[in-house]
Length: 195
Image (cartoon, rainbow, N blue to C red):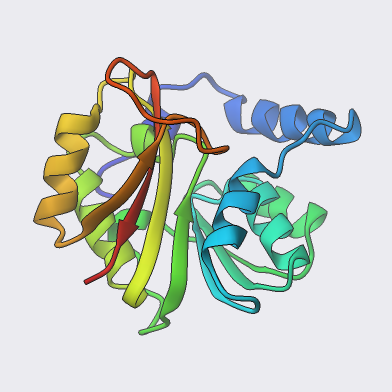
């Protein structure tokens, strides 16, 4: 990878293993980890094709697969992909850097980008990632992204990158359970539409 994602450069050694353990513990404790999947599921037809971009250990893609969708999850972190394969059989899990994502012309109805993926990319690669995601979503399809706004990549920069990538902002919320977005919110969930 030419530009190392901040997931690798701005976290401590062992962060990936901690992240896997953390979400396994939350799942074992019965925590609701399906909020992002519920939103995406409500936006699409049954049996849709979903790209889980920056899928981590697979919790969102696994839930969408359980709801009857075909899911391909990609992440640059081999540790997280190994956990997804182990914990969530069914979806296809691939190690891939989003800046150069190329799934041989495979098109999806929606791409979901949860878990603060946008703020863990290498700085300056966000527009390129949006372009690569757009290349994998069918015309009229959507890209659904959620990330914290206090980590060096805010909405002004994001909206600029969205426009430069040829995408359209369809809706924006403050949470995955559709709380209205207001100026000053510290998190944004944005639904983009492909032209």
